Length: 363
Image (tube, rainbow, N blue to C red; front, side, top):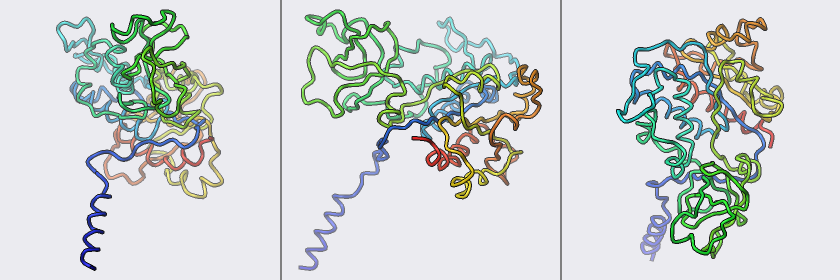
């Protein structure tokens, strides 16, 4: 009897074993989130990669960090370190009227790739025309964020793009014409009574939290909401927005959030150890709770060149970057390599600040 019982226990354990061939870390929101996490970095780091493929891979590494650590906004700024290169007008497609921008305008290139990767796959073809910058984009790993929802999955919110007609010819007959139809990736057409221009990306909210048992054949009604609604109302991480800034000062002064960032952190090997900021004592007493956190990373030579090339900061008499931030931190004291690349610093910094973000962000 004992051997039979052990055999049954082993069989039961085998049946309950987790299938590690498929991802199990599914994002599950628990409550609405008011706070945001933003980072800023210079686009000049792209020019340090020698080939278009390496430049695309570098941008992909940064995009993966943004997704993993739930960054809400990324700002690409000009730090004045861009040097003209002979490959500036290189076009990767003989039929293309556009030029590859990785060498001529790395700020645009990085913003372009990051925007492309953040967009749900089913919307990219309609929102992003063929461009040499995107030639290697298909080889990058997926970000697989919560708003990259598969066709057979259900979520009360979905990203979509507006269309002027229902999704297929057979569904045109008998449908009201005074509707805006939205391609959300579902098999059934989705519509709203709001008038929205064609080819506009929108965030849609359905009435039902759970997938409805019966979906009307004439379309599923939904309402357009702010892109921040899934985060604020339900707690979803809903991707990141991409903003371009002409200078370091513009990162701060052109913040689209009313009131701006209420907590700012600058990173440098000449700063104080990050552990001083993230110790249990600091988290409990010293660091204030925030609504909007900004973390700024420098390029190859740090943030100092960005300050020197910034005319607005020069007019104000700012000579060193640490005076611009609430905290000035060294992400990796005692580093073994002489330099830490910006794409590496983004991963190190966001990991090191993870507990601060979780504990000090205002819900």
